[in-house]
Image 1 (spheres, rainbow, N blue to C red):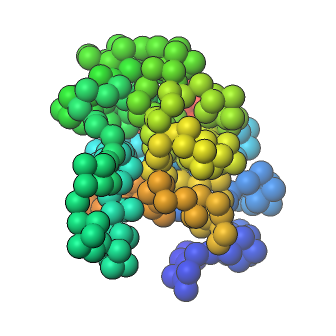
Image 2: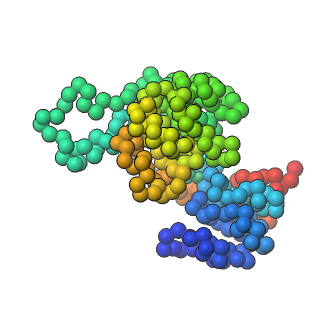
Image 3: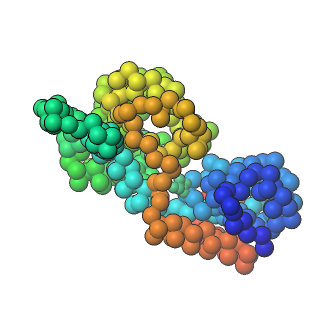
Length: 300
Ligand code: DGY
């Protein structure tokens, strides 16, 4: 058994070398398991990822070879919904901007308070549009309802969730004061929020993304935030992670940025590790994984 203990993350070249001859892989979302790598591993019988998203893995390449892919759904739902709501509130009420203002000593007697001082955007009474109404989207809907928001959603196949109105994508974008992304990154969702769709958003709307970076066109997002067309954004995930130094998002005051920490609580990370381990142990025993992203490999 090869175990990578660091330092740091496993570089692609080392990953290839370490996996030579391996029967199974337990990996993180930072490990890119692509077709070339999969095809170079004739002995590979399973992959278990400690993540719910599997866009770092070529699922089709695994499925073609009948290799099960374990993932960790369910256990990070509430934690990720909390992160989403934290970003939504922080962006709406300019919390990080205000924090920087106080820390850098800009809060002085002459600007102590005024009627429009750090005026943000109300959440109660506002409309939240959810792109994706899976488990995380639904958990965000529950929080939004408790905060007095109207919740609308777009999902590829509309879902019946109490208090949530299903809308088509364009209508949702035009109607929502806040838009939060909760779809998985796949070929059909890459660039879903492109320049044309961002242009449909309500003037002054706030965008929150705790799903995956590739779903939102970052160039179009930056332009909309810089022009004031969107009032703010809360972004946890990026097209390239870590977000490169000098990325224009880093220069905008009206954006709250976090480094892909949607599921980052000690308890949730332990639950994810536990599920990833259970998937791997099942595969080692020749049993079906309890949480398999490509169950068709088991037939029937
Ligand atoms: C996942 O598991 O895919 C999440 O992005 C981790 O936070």
